[in-house]
Each structure stands twice: as structure tokens, then as C-alpha cells.
Image (cartoon, rainbow, N blue to C red; front, side, top):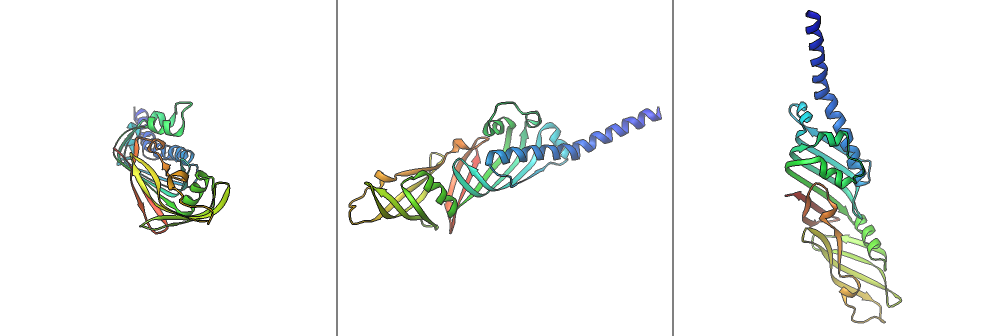
Length: 237
């Protein structure tokens, strides 16, 4: 009988260690890999807090905090992303044994069951915006970007009517129907052969990011221009 009780106690101790130490570590590593794949980077930090840690066995976490550096969402390069989530319920089985043939967004949507609060914030620098604009506006070459709280300005060369002209573009980021755009408000063309250029004819609004690109029901809710970068946030409603 004593040996039997001792064996039971040892088994209970093993289970307790597994729930308190092994399971949280395993879940954290799996989620880090999925975040890395979704944001096209390997620089991911992830912390999952639960008291006790054994709550993860039923798919509950008190808080999840993650930072991701040199990340991508859509075609936009982010210097950093930060995720804060509280009172989270997840599908533990989906984390450990993922459904095949799902992309990163679909898998994230399937993993998350509910959360009291989720906020994602990201920073786009002048270099990140330069890469995006040169990719989207194929006529614009050698763009120089400057971001201030008042406006975003870009200078470079653009092809107009088969001729190259030097241009200065100014505008701002706007949030419209949960998506983020760059709206040009001024276009100065330094070319004596080009007169009365219409902004919308060449640029118009450039869609930067769509909420549909975000996982777990997140939607963009603010965009703030600062000195040298743009702070973008999204929340789950």
C-alpha cells in the first residue's frame, strides 16, 4: 500500500510539474513560431502569464505580452509590433495539434476563443514607408521621406507624360472604414513642361493597411504621425 501511495504521489508530482513548467514552455514556443511565420521575422519575444500556470491546461491565460521586431503586415515593414492581451481563452488542442492547410491568419482565428482585451500597436519608420511607397507608386524613384506630427512629405522623381520630373508630395495618414490610407494634399512638380497637374490623376489615396490583413478580429482604430515615425494601433472589439 505504501508503495502504491508513493507511486501515486510521484505521478501527481510529475503531472504538477508538467502543468506548471513544461506545458507553458511548450505553448509559448509553439506560439512564438506561429507569430514569427505570420510576421516574417525571427525576432519574437512572447510571455504568457497565468496564476497558476496550470490554467493553461484548460486554455486560459491571464495575460499575453509579445514584442516583434522587423516585422511585416501586408506590404508594410514595421520597426516593431507590440501585442497586449488580457483574460484570454484559447483552443489548446489547436495550438498543440494544428488543423492542416490553414494560413497564419486562419490559424490565429481558430486558436483564439475569446479575450477581455487585445491591443496591437506598431511603429512604421521613414525607411519602412519609403520602401512601401516606392513599391506601390512605380513611377516614383529615389524617394526621400520625412514624417512629422503635421504631415508626411516625400520628394523624388516621377514619370509624367513620358518625362521625368522632380516632385514634392505632402499629405497625411487617415483612418477610413478601419483601413489606413496615405492621402496626398499637395503635389509640387518642378518641371516647366508640366502645368496644372492634378493630384488624383497620379496618386490619389494610397491604401497602406487593411484590417482584413489582421488576425483574431483586430481592427485598426488609430494612426498617429510623430517625428520620424507613425504609431498605428488596432484593437479587438
